[in-house]
Length: 364
Image 1 (cartoon, rainbow, N blue to C red):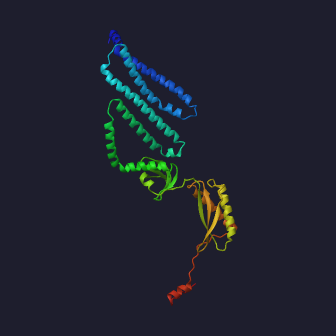
Image 2 (image 1 turned 120 degrees about the vertical axis):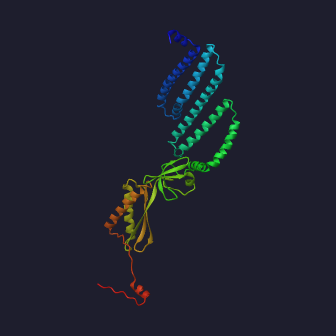
Image 3 (image 1 turned 180 degrees about the vertical axis):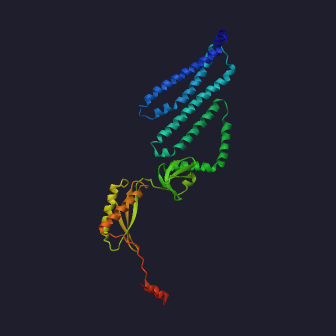
């Protein structure tokens, strides 16, 4: 291609319109990057959350708006140069509508998802239901955006809505177990019998920490570090023991037996001293808890009592109980308090009477 042909190409009205539109788009993209960078630096020093969420949601929607403006510039330059767009106008206008609506939908979707993700860090309820809320919000936003786009393009949405109603009924019948699990998950989120991080015991006996409450199932991390995955419908209909509700602290009963010859007042005093010492010195003990001792049973070989301790969490009760048992055993030995062995006695006279003439001889 010679210089004359290149000059003719550059002077072609269509080429001028395209280059002008492309240059406008590149210029606006550079301005977008500079402006958002400056605004982001200012927002980072702000204590408000919403302005940061708005700025974080803007880049992609602004890009769609810039594309729409570039198309508008192309139309203006073509009109200025006397070029006719009758055959292109039927395509350009829908593209502009599509870009504007897409920009609005993406902005609202990103803003809502960002707001849910941000505020979920401050709320236990939203933290456990973040994935469900984000999924529901995204479905509603994109569904409404699609209907608005169809209406803007001149497509009647009434048959679409009617078809969606019939389709939704068929899908609901086909996906009844899945929908049951979904709404059970929503019920768990609203009713809040469990939260992410809680230590629970399932109706089947498994114990573990709630790791995630999802759309269909809830994940419970057991103490051996394996996962129990339960459908939400089964979980919402079963009995659950939540050891972190209403608070993490819980009582730790310890059963003790002492000899019948023991001075029970002395036993109570010594036991309380050891219990208070453990609760104050152990890292998992509750130092301000008023521990107590209850004597409750005349057993076969001992008088049984219960010592009530207090641990900061359910999982820490094992260490508190272990430290108390060792300290109590040592202190009982120092104080002369005996923990009896089980005793079994055989009544020889009674056994001989039952057997009639039977006799028992003992030989050295």
